[in-house]
Amino acid sequence: MSNFPKDFLWGGAVAANQCEGAYKTDGKGMSLVDILPDAHHGRWDALMHPKEAEKTTYDFYPSHESIDFYETYEEDLELMAEMNFKVFRTSISWPRIFPNGDDLEPNEEGLKFYDRLFKKCRDLGMELLVTINHFDTPLALFDKYNGWENRKLVDLYLKYCEVLFKRYKGIVKYWITFNEINMLLHIPFLGAGMDVSGLDENDALQKKYQAAHHQLVASAKAVKMAHTIDPDCQVGCMLAAGEVYPNTPNPKDVWAAVESNREGYFFIDVQARGYYPNYALSFFDQNNIKLEMESGDLEALKDTVDFVSFSYYSSRLISADPEVSAETGAGNVFNNLKNPYLKTSSYGWQTDGLGLRITMNNIWDRYQKPLFVVENGMGEKDVLTDDHKVHDDYRIEYLKENIVEMDKAIEDGVICLGYTSWGCIDLISAGTGEMAKRYGYIYVDRDNDGNGTNKRYRKDSFDWYKQVIKNNGI
Ligand code: BGP
Image (cartoon, rainbow, N blue to C red; front, side):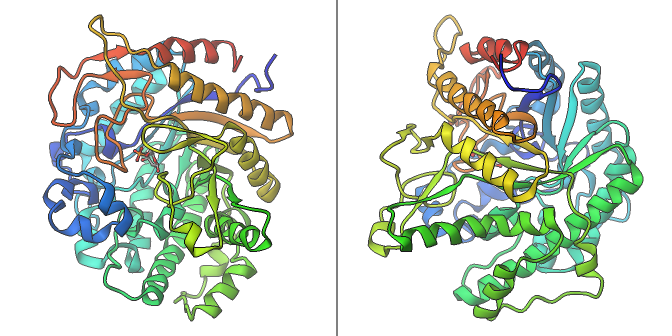
């Protein structure tokens, strides 16, 4: 017996910009990520976290075609239904709906794509979990306003939300306002469509927290709007989670971990509790950060989310000692230390199933709102054999370890709505821009240079996950 409730939502997750391709089709405008190929020698490098820019290889970023999900979604969703998916997480591409971000009317052709996609999901018996903004703010809003630094984005985002909530009332049951909202502090270009390069640390912090305030207000107003338009839908926030452990029992390391954990929780504290936490107000004071607010903002923040969703790939490790911290390992954007107790993938990401249980318990204890694990998985360079098989036992092992610990977290008393593992079908990696870093149960025959048949093949993990869902987690 497992502890998963019988209506637990098993499924998988993708994001529009990493799988749809068709980047100019049917009136779509350019998004932040669509400029990557051109920007390799210019803008993009400047906008990345310097450490990330060094190690990434953006020679070819096939986001323009990606895996052509725009064309192949029917076949792909059927494969997901074959795995018994109860829910499918995707995002809506904002510039498909508002190509310039501030257009007067939405782009009907863009909406029609999501009409078809969502209908297919529902016909196959899958609920929809939809991220409203997943790293692809319209490029025009970056050029015109420097993204979320500008208050104007709040209204433009809400206009976009209103179109979605009205059109997909009764169709989309679960919404997420922003993908990994705390990433704004680490990758402000992707997270908030803004450039803070060249600024000193304090000015950059000021701008990032101002943008954060705008997103937090926009998110809270979106929650209220969604509930008014469709009282049956649920709206969540999303954290790039992963408990930060202290490197040693030295209280200085423990305190560094407390502060690092708070940096992420800051966003969710506001979205799930409805007000700025004291530690944040004090941090703003100490760093001379002055948030510009409009009257009514603090009141608006009181509309809190229905559930707390998060991505979890691994735990993190921190030291207060600058010399130790210099030896940062790889991982999901945050430069964390390598934990000697954990296994490491070829991409340097570590596996910590128990860390998922710890993270879930901590988030649950902090907010007492239902959780949703909306990203988890292992990115590896898979090999397609001559007979079109992929023996990804390493992925099965990773997922098994995480699912077993999620089961224990539920036994601990955590309420969790569902689990959508990341990149259920191979897609473009957000962090490396590669096709080769694969997370899927479904292999897509396309390489980093865009070569291949683009055919889909079931990996070993496909059959394994199908059984996991069938047996509700056993
Ligand atoms: C998360 C993003 C996803 C996804 C994932 C894996 O931060 O929300 O978009 O890509 O990380 O990261 P990567 O693609 O870099 O392996």
